[in-house]
Image (cartoon, rainbow, N blue to C red; front, top):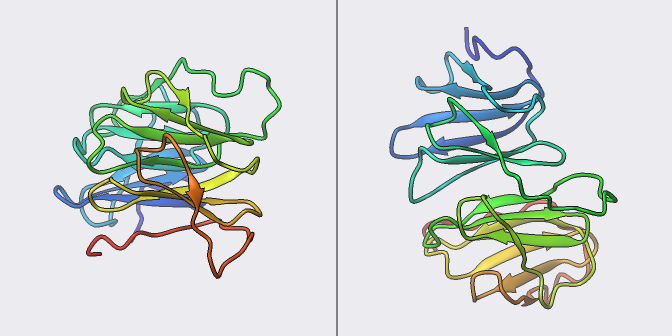
Amino acid sequence: MKSAGITNRSTLCIVRDAASRMLYACTGDGVFRSADGGEKWVRQHSGLSTRVIALALDPANPATLHARDAHWVYTSRDGGVTWKKSDADLDSSGTINGIFALATAPGMPGAVFASVFRHFWKSSDGATTFAKSGTGLPLARVQTVVADAKGTTLWLGTEGEGVWRSTDGGATWTESRAGMGAVNVQALHADAAN
């Protein structure tokens, strides 16, 4: 039977390690891993909160994954077997409705991006610490982040303010929404070939 072992069918994302062909699924019951193309799944939850909303694989080291629940970022350095919660408090005011975007970027080892309500954060040390990274961004929720294949350009999609672009690793941002306008962008995809 396909998907054997997944205890919660509410799958919110799938991440694939191209080198090992390992699949990871984030669900309402944590992270599951499949080594056989999705036929069988094993729950990977040691140290991880139950509901996982997003996963990001470190392109430089596929054994390192980052996950997020509604409020925290977690990191696994052993292919999802064990997880550690980051001590970084991305919303000390306690006013957010949760963490939204989570991403890594090729060509930027150790970089992890996360957004909370009206704030955008970057870690340069594998999600151990975070610093605000939103110079130039409008006061809007960042919902998705993608990078080009080299990691030199980042784009993010916002709630009601369209797409924004950074060419300096996320330090500063400019509008990238000509022809699109101030729309609600919930997902972006960067073509790996171009």
